[in-house]
Image (cartoon, rainbow, N blue to C red; front, side, top):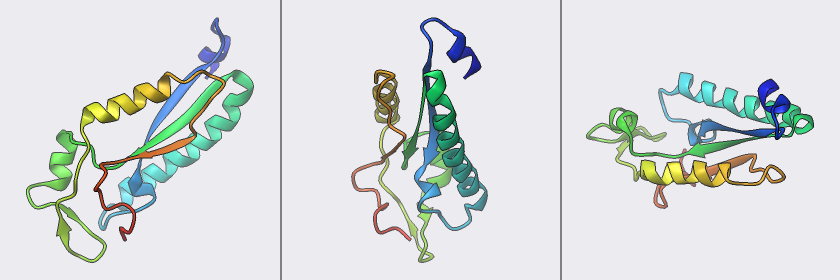
Length: 129
């Protein structure tokens, strides 16, 4: 933020990578969920401190995005659910995730999205847990 506030033109945008797991954790995901809670606090604090420096700070909480990591977490069978079952969950493409980041980055500095949740349309987020 120091660099962004001293450059010309002044300001900039920080986009943090959150996760829906901070809001709807999975069994066995305590470390990941705690780290994503930390991202929420970091985002809100930086957004507050960035105001006077013309730095906009936001966060995108992605659901399941098809990546090499999701291949590990979903596996062939799926992901653990709160009721103890394993379910293969829908995923969104990594291109859609990149488009979301680009859309947030393209906002003028006078506008900010503090937090955004983006997921596959049929992902069981609402009602999960």
